[in-house]
Image 1: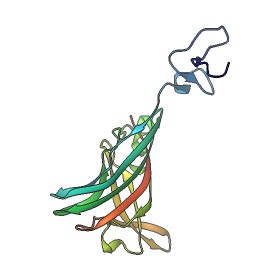
Image 2: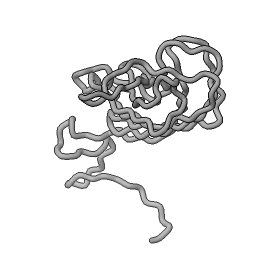
Image 3: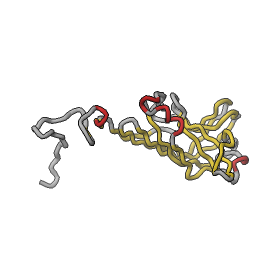
Image 4: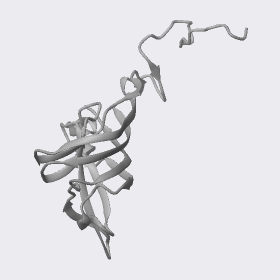
Length: 178
């Protein structure tokens, strides 16, 4: 009937209800999907050193966690003041990035990070691509400048934030937990 609420349950061929998850492509423990979560997080402009503070007019973050994979979207608008040194980053990821190479966490440092828009980075990034990665065993994105060249983009070093400028930063990162 329309409007009636029904609980979704998973039963095996014998009619037994499975409270522990769903097996996909086999019945081994590696095939068990037992973790799915959606939520919000708060992205924060971060520097490895300095005393910068941010005044945010928008600070949005959402995530989807499927098993050990985490997909985080971020969108924030901020005016940064104070001093910032070292590398620029985005802190506040909802889960700590993995470290174990046996479980794929060893590749976590090479996770996907894409910026759709960011005018918050220093002038030295003009005409160059901003990229980054989720730092292993941490909860932040390391932002870097990529230089174009004959072999594609190469690491041009750490990106830095503009101080005293109101700007927006949007993008996403995909990484794995342990």
